[in-house]
Image (cartoon, rainbow, N blue to C red):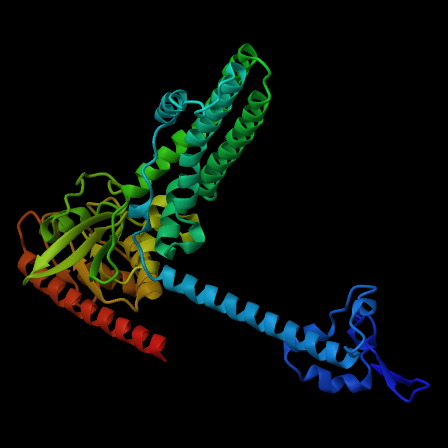
Length: 457
């Protein structure tokens, strides 16, 4: 800002500093104090006024007063915006702390049912009462019926796109389930196609309703009504596959197991066919398929344990092969999603008899990788099929790694030997599981108390 004196002795202030400074121009020495100010204030200084704006001001408003008002207004607006973004972020974090969004998604009607319902309802729409002229009454009825058909077709689609959860609002565990179940981007693609169909129907419906409303004779109105219905139905039929895909997505999401984050959960992990599903059957109400081939469990299966009048959850997860995490298939990644995002206690199952088809050495490699990555969880190791360990003919193994050799003989330190067939160790397993889940409950309560204290603070 610079000032010049006028003949009357008054100073006229020029608002030069409100012009934006080009980014390549060097800062003047006096700008050091400017740099120490807050970011919103600095951005306010760089805003400029429209050309010819000063000439529209009242004579008594000085440039200095205008500058101060502009600076205060810009700073206030920017601060409010930043605070709003912070509130939105905190709100999103609060949303991510809960699961269960899949059970709240709307029921999706098949495309055929939507079309038949819309046709029936739109044909029953009468013209506006009191229109004596036949041509006017017919064109009024035609326009209203086309508008009704358009709305009956488009409103359900809008309901679906608005009420299906956005991925960014989901708990990380549920986001992983969507990606691993349908593939990257498929969920958003289906919703996008449904919304595109809605927009197309709305456009076609408005166009033909408008044309019908301009009819000059009864016959012309009837022809335009018939033509409008045909075009709307053709547009809907052309995009109905998007609705059918959404029906399948909704069914898959609603069938996914419900996990209560406030109830302790026991997660069974291990290589394929080591006996996880058999243990789930004796521990809980879950009835997973039990077969002698890998990847019997192709999804997350949930059951419940009732012990000493306390209710717990137990989940059976797909088996993990011995390979890098980047090379795992989507079935295996479901297991990693449970381990990564849910507050669970781990029951890791080992089969040292190798009846599962996976060598002891490979089981050890997988176990060590998972233990190193998720070792902060409450943990219980179980050696299953222990009744088979003494029945097979002794085979001489020469393990180069001493850790693998010790693992082959004894399993992990503190592991519990169990046999579902002979019920060896089953009673002890149930007692240890109850102790583990009781400890997990204490962790959940402690974490909840810390979170509430943090919110209050």
